[in-house]
Amino acid sequence: MTIVPSERLSSIGAYAFAEVDRQVEEFKKKGIHPIDFGVGDPTIPTPAFIREACKKAIDLRATSGYPSYIGSREFRTAVAGWMKKRFAVDYNPDSEIASTIGSKEAVFNIAEGFVNPGEVVLVPSPGYPPYQRGTLFAEGKSYFIPLLKQNDYLLDLDSIPNPIRKKAKILWLNYPNSPTGKIAPPQYLKKVIEFCHKHGIIILSDEAYTEIYFKEKPHSILEYTRDGVAAIFSLSKRSAMTGYRVGWIAGDKQLISIFKKIKTNIDSGTPTFIQDAAIAALSDESHVEEMRKSYEQKRDILVKSLIKAGLSDCTPEATLYLWQKVPNGYTSLEFAKKLLSPDIAIVTTPGSWLGDENRQLKNAGEGYVRFALVPDLASTQLAANRIQNIKF
Image 1: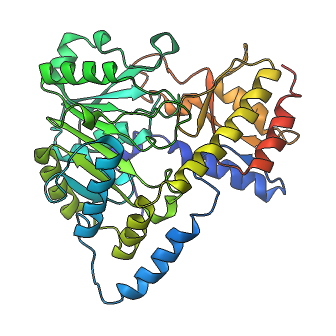
Image 2 (image 1 turned 45 degrees about the horizontal axis):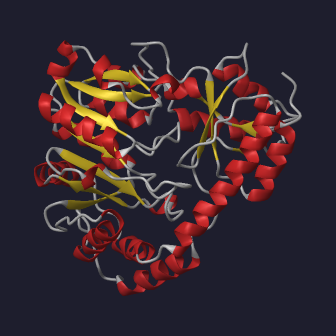
C-alpha cells in the first residue's frame, strides 16, 4: 500500500531545527562531537529549586487526574501576579490568561480560531517557522515582511500594500526578536497598535524572550493596550524549562476565549505538577539574572572571536542568539557548512532556513547564520578559539 501525505504537508520542507538535530546526529555517528549552537535549547540544568518543586508536586498531585485545559487557577493567578510586577499590568486570571504547552502549541494552533481560507497573516521573515506553518494549516496565506538591518530589524508596516492590509487578519510580532536580537522601542509598539487598530488586524505578540536581555529591559505590547492583542509567553528560556512545556497566553478576553475553545478541541493541559514547578519559577528572579549574566558572558566571548575573524559586529540587545552576517562570497548554507567542517565542528542554523519558504520575496535570512548561545562556557570558549583562526 502506498501512503501519500496530504498536499498541505507535502508543500512544506523539513522543519529547520529538526534538520539541525539531524546534522548533529550524523556527526556523532562519525565520532565527531560538534559544538552545537544550532537549536535554542539551553544545556544548563533547570534550577534545583524548580526541580524540587516539581518532585514535591508529583506526590501532591498523585490523584489529580487530567489537568485543566486552560491551566490551574493557582498557575493563572501566579502568572497574573508576575505580569503585574514585571509589566505593571492587571490581567484577570479567569478571563484574560490561559496556560499553554510551551509557546509553540499556541503559536501554531491559534490561527485556527481566526483565519478563514484565503485570509492573510502578516509574518516576519526571518522568523519562527510555526507562524507561517500554523497559517498554512488554517488554510490562510502568509504575507512575509522582511526584517532588514536598514530598518533596524523592525517590520516596515508602510511597505504593506493596501490590498494586503484589507485582507490581513493577524500580524505576528516577535520582540525581543529571534533571530536578530532586536528590542522594539515603546514608540514602535504604539505605532504597530495604531496601524492594526486602523485596519482591524489582530496582533499576536510572541514574547518568549522578554527576560533574556542585557541592558534595556524589553517592554510587552500588553503595556499599551489589550484591545485586539494577545501575547504568548514561555518559561523555556527564562527558567531553562524547555522540556517542561509550560507557558501562557494573555490579552484581550475575546481572543483568549476563542483560544480556549481551540485548545479544548485540539490538545490537553500542561500536567498540574509542572504548573506547580512553573509557579515556583515565577516566584524567583535571581536565577533569571544569573542566566542573563551567563548568556552575556558567552555572547561577548563569541562576538569578540567573530570580529577577530574579520566578521561584522553582531552584538544583540536581547535573546540568546547571534545573527551573524556571513563573509563575502558565501551563502548562509555555505558558511554554515564551512563551520561544520571536521576541524571546526561548530553547528549553526543557516539564516535562509528561517526566511520566506515560499519565496514571496528575496529570502531575508540569506546572508546570515544564527548562533544559539546554549553550549556551556568552556565549549563556547573552545568554539571562539576555533573561529578566530578561520581564514576567509
